[in-house]
Image (cartoon, rainbow, N blue to C red):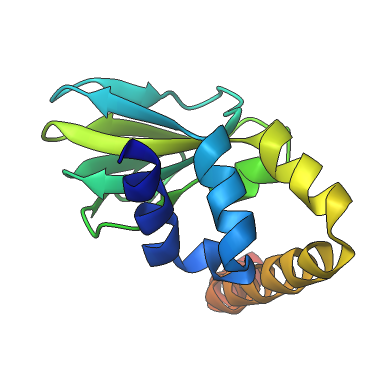
Length: 153
């Protein structure tokens, strides 16, 4: 039953639409359901997340570091927190805290990387997803860069 819930959570998660049904089942098996009480820290800015969290229920608050960064809430079931942590072993500059009691499915980086090694097709889809996501980030940052360059002159 718990594995069925984990598989259902992954099926809802947009990032994991790059996986076929069997790959999602394998990740669900490798995943770990985690409960966070209200006000619990999922991870702190500067920490290196060891994988990604898929929100099953509850609300999380993200508090990014940096000037002008604004906190935001995550409450949509299937939202993926730190999908890039599945690929990158780098610290994140955001703190995630439970606003309400939360249920998550933690997917370890090592399980995801092992799956990528076993499936070149999945690896290609993951690269395409990362490229798309980075392109979206760059589109958002472009106006900021223009304003910064304009203020320097």
